[in-house]
Length: 620
Image (cartoon, rainbow, N blue to C red; front, side, top):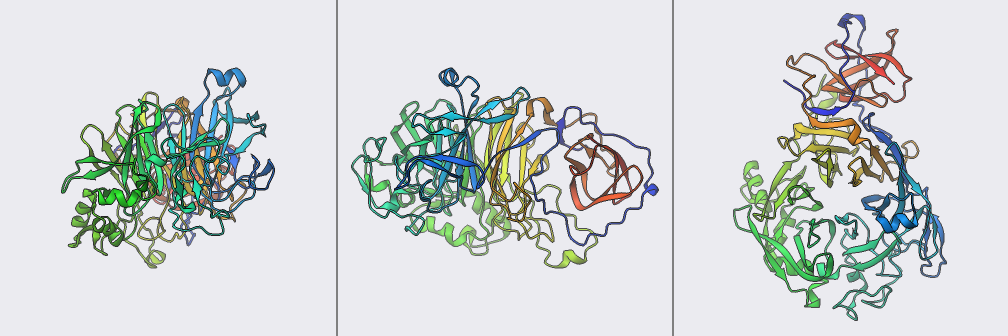
């Protein structure tokens, strides 16, 4: 059969006449090597770390009783947004390319950054080779430096935490306050009621003067100004929910929003005037019974009681419950909306809350329960949703249905894997998709999917592995939508979640976060960090079938890219060893389709698989 993979310019297979008997392949490892301690990425792409939590300094405003100053950036990087510089920006900073906005999911009290969550913005320039460099700037409030803490305290009140968000077509940024706060704790020093409109800038038209219990001023979408590192407003008219992601239509009229909850609502806001999200109508999605189709039910947001109690009102109005909606994105080529529904192991009792509140449950969960043979449906305790999926919403038909299911399903092996000579774990396995975006490369829509594993059980990781190392995938949306057509373009260190993928407007760079890794990883991969993969235009002709690579013989062993400088991939999951030109064995991997070779000097090497097939490898 033919093998699909990312076609990298200049990365052709190198044949060799060596026979299987020339090297003795002895695989002696007693555990599967799936414990990366750094970020792994395809070698043809330029890789760079540009922002490190807990290491890089951020400039702060005068907050609480602390004067403006400098402190270490928070950890737990999540959402990334990119705001391209306009002509006015370039007149002030000639070298400016744009601003990067990074959320911090970590919640803690901080005298200088502010309590709750946090966010950092910084300016970058684009170099001649396409890579990005963080540059110095001076803000209107007098702060100078490279990295700037977003001021929430003096503008809109603290944030509960900062997770996903929205990167609008015009570069405007919203940060999402995800984890739903039902009470305040030591991470929030201020328990006084919050009066909307008493901070600078003014709060929100129509709600100024309204009073919220302090905890009820958390869990909104919050618009920020990345250029000046300050919050603009909490989007009270979109309601209070455990928001994760959102997307805004190309005409700047409609915001689609997802709530990371079980059950979680799918909502939208339609502006009266394009680009003005302070005035318009807010809706919840209500799916028809036994159908993917549905309709939108308006929620009266002139009733201020619906602002803090939006979730309850949404379900009593018949809203449909999903199993943890995470990121939301839109394909600019089609206008279709895509959402990650990350899943929850046994969501039955939680999904039932949608029904008892007056709503319903998304149709695809009934179909999945039927496939599982669970007679009680998706509210039954036996119903499982280990892996999650990507959903597609079509505005033309109002249908919400699965686009790409996670998996494939893999039974737990318990301790059996230890005695098995070979465990054929799927070459590609998608578990708990979280971050989601669509980048346009060479006129083609490419979906980028980030993993955030909910656990290491139920086949979410390879047998014998107990960490939650996550992978970054891309998918050519012009091809058959299947797990087989996913292309792995990154792996983050042990313990880390990969999230926040965001392309630059030219489609040549992809900004990505690796957050909350294990502390024993090598520096800087023991911290949350933001990295960039650059060179997509130059190195990717397409995600397609390469006519020069024919694998009609299933016994033919292939490697790519070749030459390489960081890692090599195999066209099959196998045990393999790396040898130098003298036949000395240097490295072994088991049950894998990838080998990291960045530690070795440039030169000629050989790769041998479990069947004794040998390929010559050039490391450059």
